[in-house]
Image (cartoon, rainbow, N blue to C red; front, side, top):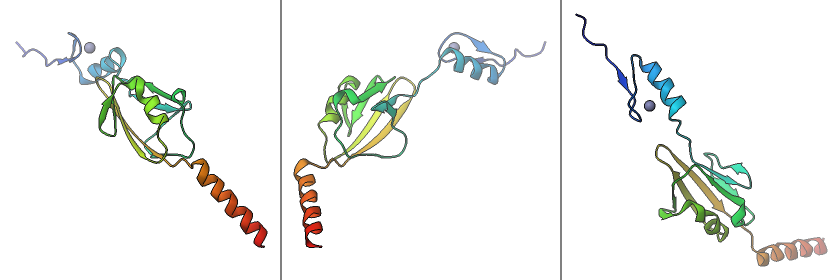
Length: 132
Ligand SMILES: [Zn+2]
């Protein structure tokens, strides 16, 4: 009698497979793990630090497929991330989104020019123009 064949068991359900490739395929098709995503104004934030020159509104922020969120190391509900980010002007936000199987990290660098600063730049411009 040949020994019973090795079977590859799925860790998510009771099925098992003769080939690793078959298990991989099953896992991919039956238990897809979606990567959490952070979208700002409809665009997903990628691996690169995103610089923000204008303030975000709470509605500009969308979190997808995340059950947990860390903002600068502090746990907050994913649904509240928008209102937190909307308060940021000159700071760095390290956002970690996670679900059961995946984690996404996003870094946002807020460099929002305040009105006084903008007014100053404008005044300097005008002075420069006048002095010429
Ligand atoms: Zn399975």
